[in-house]
Amino acid sequence: MKQFQQISKIFSQTIGRAARPLRMLASMACVALAVAGAPAWAADVKLASANISGAADAATSGLRDSHQLVENFTTDLISLIEKAQSYVDKDEPRFYDELGVLLQRYVDFDSFSRAVMGKYASSKRLQSLPAEDRAKLETQMQRFNEVFTGALIGTYGKGLLVFEGERIEVLAPNPEAGKHAAAGKARIKQLIHGDRPEPYVIYYSLRRGEDQQWRIRNMIIESSNLGKIYRNQFDNAYKVYEGDIDRVIKNWVAGAES
Image 1 (cartoon, rainbow, N blue to C red):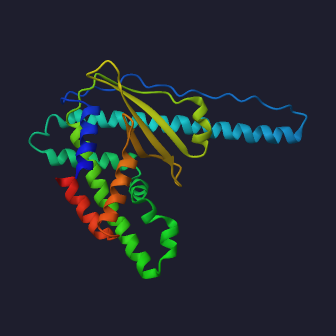
Image 2: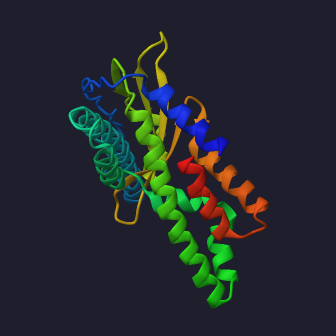
């Protein structure tokens, strides 16, 4: 499928051109937020201040934790690529296996794949279906998650194997993003300095799950929103195959492997 070729090109052009990865430079410290206290004599104001302080603490913590996750992800990824240079020519499947294990730690594939299915896998649609049809759709959602995860790991891995960045920066988040972090959302910017004067730009969209852990939900690479690209692809395939999700999944696999 053209979409897979497009995404593979995005990965490979952005992440580099030869297998000589470098470790990250220094970690970027997260910007702390300061909140003034309220007068001690006003109980209602103290309560308001406590609420504001609690929100600020949550915002600061969210910014720090989401930023740290992307830093850890980047460090682990580069370490994996460095180690892979000693064996990838003889055992490429090992690299993809290890990459899959790493990505599962940092990426919320369940939410990512469901977002790609869009309205066809929404809670509203699930609830509207009879029990038998709902069970069928849930099975299809699980199957698509497996297929989507495998395809994304494969496409991402191809780009990583040609990495030649000079340095990578995970930028400290803007303090104004604190309100989003407090609500469990974050957007972290990464710069990859390589074969051109301007760095390549990647944005990671993260969400905090019910377990309070941050995970990556989407990536925007050089203005190319992978989630939207994949979602449009799924929507088009759904129409082409006249609503047959099993055929969509089958041909998704074929497209990823071509």
